[in-house]
Length: 227
Image 1 (cartoon, rainbow, N blue to C red):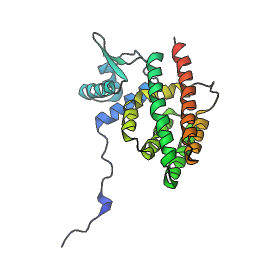
Image 2: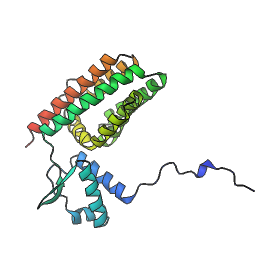
Image 3: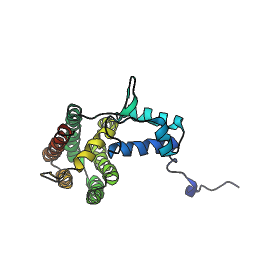
Image 4: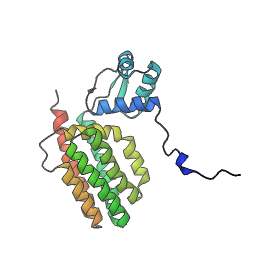
């Protein structure tokens, strides 16, 4: 007698490893500003705070160093990477090139299915904006852009964005904390969505550029006036 296929036993997502959990906790703490730029990451202290071994902490620090969130000083050990305006400006310039192009391509290629996915991602994003919690907003924003890049067929560009995602998230968390926006982030995303659903590539690219120009200016002010 053969055993019938039973999909209820399937594991869709492998459980997170201890290293992944530690990386996630430290990444979130750095993005939220609990560990500011230049702060030393003392292994023994982190072991006590996280309740894990030194080898796990070291592995997590190496992973975050590859993401650009941590840097190792020659005689000072690992510290949280400092983020200044010249670095941030480069990140925003890269985002303008990749995201505006992806939004235009998405508008040209989108169909009803993409419209539904994008509107659903936007609805989740608006809920996250209302909560004002970075831990909810950052993944919701990532999902919104993932729909755009995937529908545009810009998979390689999305890989590049993902490599920068931790540093992008640091900047997003910083600009979210400001209250002097001329246009809210939610309104910017709404305009991007509407332009794509209207099949207007030029308007989609313009909406992305307007959003990033606004965010870049907020980041510049915050970074240049930081003590």
